[in-house]
Image (tube, rainbow, N blue to C red; front, side, top):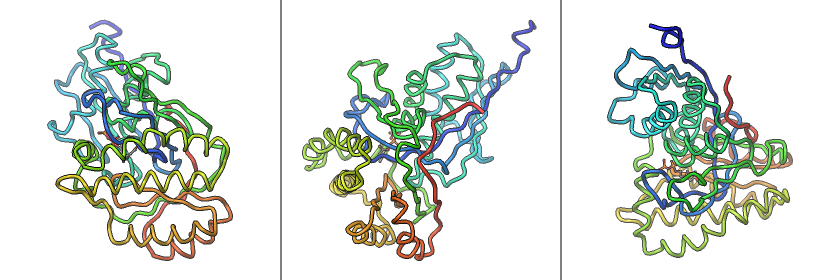
Length: 328
Ligand code: DP6
């Protein structure tokens, strides 16, 4: 065995969960996770996945271990696409073991697949000693889960839908760094149960909803509207944009067949409290495909969040707009 074969190819990377203010919901290519329209999101500093990738010649399969749980082979599909891409770039037959740790619950609408796929892509590429630019890493992360494209760049991000059929122009870029608008982020954990219908499945169902065309019209404009509000630090504009986009998405999921309702009773209680509060103080909220609620607010609204929302006694994380993925 020569020197390069005996070498250990290992690296560790961290990525943050991201939550969209203008959401991705619908694909122009299901295999490559190419979106139908642009989306805009922010990373959450306090929600982190850290992953160590090790390439070796001994194993016959790739492996993913999340918080000490070994993912079964039939569930490796998403991560497999990321590793296959890196293997092809390298011209390798080596297999990869990914050891991953999340500091938050999986598959509950807290975007663990986004941070997970972004950390896996960055760690596996670094371990393979590939020098890839951020756009390429974002495209590779996207292969695992579309929204993971947005966990590679820092702060406020925009995932460009692109138009090329190979997806090489469908990556996310940063539109503003984390300190551009130092908002507070509260993640309220309404449920730690896995969601009953995956985003991938629900998106497909929604394209047959009678409301799909109306949703599409709104969703295609949403990224520009959200980006302008963010760049101008215009909280009322952000509030209007995020609430309309969130409600359109959830109204749509309720009209597919069979219908999907991601709300839990406490989700609605929090939504109603925020919709009341936002008329008086700078606060707004959103939720992805799950029951948990993510709240954004300015400094002056923090005491109101504590009185009205934290007082409900649910587990929560208070955080800030997060950085991009990095090799540690
Ligand atoms: C509601 O990225 O989980 O969170 O590409 O099929 O893996 P796949 O879907 P995923 O969908 C995220 C949907 C969303 C909105 C968003 O994050 O933009």
